[in-house]
Structures are given as C-alpha cells and as structure tokens.
Amino acid sequence: MSIPEHSWYVASTPSGLGGLGFDDAAAKSIPHLIKPLANTIRLALHGMKPQIVASPNLKEPPVPVLLLPKLIVNSYRSWQSSNSYHISNLS
Amino acid sequence: MSTTVRSAYITIGQPLGCKLKEQKCKVLTSTANISPLPFLTSQHAGSLSTVLTTYCGGIDKGEALNGVRILGAPVGNKSFVEQYQNKTLQKLTSAVSTLHHLISDPQIATSLFKFSLQHYTSHLLLTDILHNKSTTSTTSIHNSDFTNTINTITQSFIS
Image 1 (cartoon, one colour):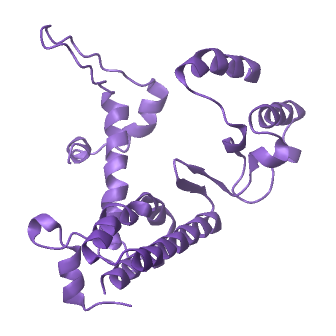
Image 2 (image 1 turned 45 degrees about the vertical axis):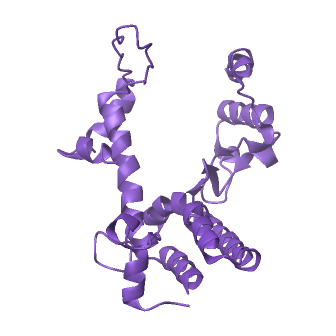
C-alpha cells in the first residue's frame, strides 16, 4: 500500500524540519555506506584517540594516539580523499 | 598456534568477561558453496580442521560455505545476503502487524515504530548497496527491491 508522493515527502522529512521523521530507506542507504567507510579510513590513517576521563582536579593527561600497523594503514591509503577526514566527523 | 590462541583467550579473556561460544563461531572458507578443504595441502587442511574442531564445534558445524553474519550484517554471496534480507523483512512485517493489533493508541504505535522497528533494517542498508545496483541514476538515492520494500512497509504503517 503506498501513499501519495507529497505525503511521503512530508512523512520522510526530519521532525526538526517540520516533517514526521520517518526514515526513507532509499535516501538513507548512501550515508549508511559512506559514514562508516570514511570513519574507517580516518581511523586507519590518523590513528585512534581513546577517550580518557580525567578527574576535574587534575590536569588533563595527554591522550595518546594509537596507530595501526603499517600493513593495515597502507591498504586504506589509496582510499583517502581530500575530504574523507571531514565526512567522517559529520554527526 | 591455535592452542596458544585458545589458552590466551581463556587466561586473558575470561576474567574480563570474554567467553568463546562454539555455536556462534564460524569460519568462512568459501562463498561458492564448495569446501576448499579437499584442495588444500595436508598441512593447511590439518590446521583448518583443528581450528574448526577446537573453536567451532566440528568441521560440519563450523565451516560456512555461503556466508556469515558479522555484528548482524550478512557477509557472503548474493543469495545468502538476499535470503537474510528477506528473512529480516518478514520479521519486520510481522512486527508491524503485531504493533497494529496490540496497540490502539496511534501516538504510542508511531513512537514504537520510529524509535524501535525502523532501526530493524538500518544495518542492512550498507550490505544492500554493495550487493544490489540502484535502479535510479541519482547518486544520492539508492533504489532497490530491499529499500522499496522497507519504504512500502513504512507507508503501509502510516496509512
């Protein structure tokens, strides 16, 4: 059972923009692929920064960056683009 | 080698809550529904058999020949992925139908659908892109049988 095109447009528009906030699977698929892929590329190339919760009375300790072995990093190097770092940081 | 890994898993992992469940362990040896075991050298075949017997509850149970699921996402050949997608869609349809029958308040039903059932298939969208070509030329939208069915289920819920 399908609803009129304009109704689906309203239903699938995010609630913050005045719609009903239902997910449109066709529109959400591409971000579902790109976001984790860009995130993986960023983590592989720039390393992982673990979150360390410091006591409020103490100075924040320097957070070490965990780098992956070169063998893994190299396999992702050719996937890097000028904006892959920024895409993976999008919320 | 496998004995060392197993003992390390037990000594390091178990105190931290990591337990190996044999029935959940699979080794994906092929995606063509043919076991490569007979074609391997005796040394490699022996190692693989040992791993399957030790970690996966036996060669028959532990060897996956079409695909496996990793964190819920199917990884394998096209028919394996499609089979899993169809199974998930059937579960979603059944859950939506149950929601209709059990909850008369439309606001509660909508909230449950939006915040719970709608995310039932979201982890499968990535797999769908990798396995099925979009039927539209627009690069921002991925139209496939899977996404169309999900949208149809959502639309039938709304109407």
